Image (cartoon, rainbow, N blue to C red; front, side, top):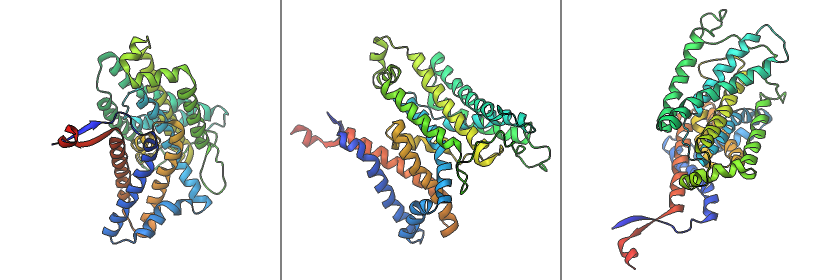
Length: 355
């Protein structure tokens, strides 16, 4: 008889090595997949992973995709460390984009220096408000956080679609579902003449380092780690469970909201129905690939951003379906979870157990 047995002490080395092992296994799977698609696997992997870093423009575009991934992943990392299973970063991102756009459209004919800060604040508060809904349901009625956050993702999406077809639609846009272009005073400053990388990427990195400081160097971070590792012990020690839940969820909502408003006030410059290719969902992979550590999320978000950029290039250069990128992300998460499982558990037979 074969059964699963918990290891007495998981390997620290393998805990940190498992993301790299998962990446290697994903690349092997990708090679097999490209061969099955009758594509040269070496060329495909080169386009997917190397070409995005080949020149200044591609690097700039990669950084643009890195920003929202990093912001969402950092917030999710804190939630997961506190054992709060927030799957709603995508909805919080869309809510931030919607709220920030509503503020930005008030400054279409204005050059006020307050336009950009107020737009960012509108996005942040909208993301926090969207995260507050499932948090209240969790702490008040003990609802399933996974289900409520997932359902709110779809509500946010259709609310955004309704807005660009209705109250926020550009009256001079010939009926297209998009808002008016934002004024220059509202847009985030561009950092490079060779691409679209903007101030939002810098804010994302700074906030990731700030989250690392909170988690690793403050008493609040210690409470979050203890609460996530052993909730009964944290409760016995007198930690405010509801307060910790509210903090990590609102913090995650604020970062996701900032990611959303940074997209519309950054590279896009207006509100459209397809502002996110699924950044909030991919951020879950980034969080786990970064070992639920804000600093690790910086490296992991760069890798996922390269995959996003490489997927676009592979579609152009080799005619590879863009869905392959989504498959890569799913397979990467599968191998990562599989590696983590075998770090914590081992498969034994009854004969071995008797011995």
